[in-house]
Image (cartoon, rainbow, N blue to C red; front, top):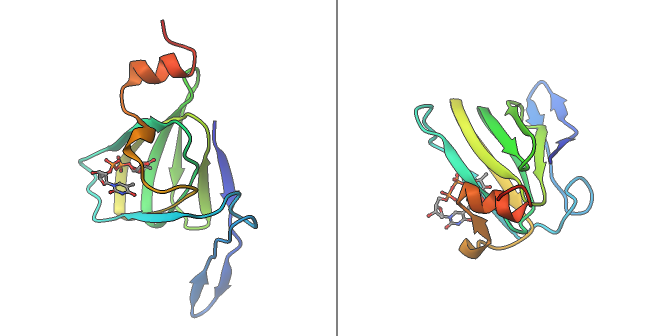
Length: 133
Ligand code: T46
């Protein structure tokens, strides 16, 4: 349903650095990068799946809980360290809850923005993954 990719940290007394490179630690060609910032713990985000988009997601600041669902299993994982990346490939329902400590998310994608790639209806999602009526 998902993979965690651990980035190597270059860490010294002046600070920490992580880097992402296509086909090295990112398993796809990066076509788009977007950022979610100014987050508010009172509001959750997501509530959709993608038909074909692959994404690598990491919290460059703060923390957030991702609830992931493949139509059979539902699991919640926390992103709270910039070197801990969540790789989502395939049709996975995602919800983001409990944004905290000024959470800023960085997301790398293998494709351009396309509204038609979104599945925003949970029953439709279940049908697509073969677990609906
Ligand atoms: C995902 C989770 C983790 C754009 O114009 N370009 C973009 O590249 C993106 C991602 C969004 N938008 C527009 C579309 C909406 O009008 O920004 C608005 C907010 O997007 P959305 O409600 O989809 O945001 P989230 O936080 O619910 O979901 C986002 C991504 O859309 C989604 O692909 O997996 O983050």
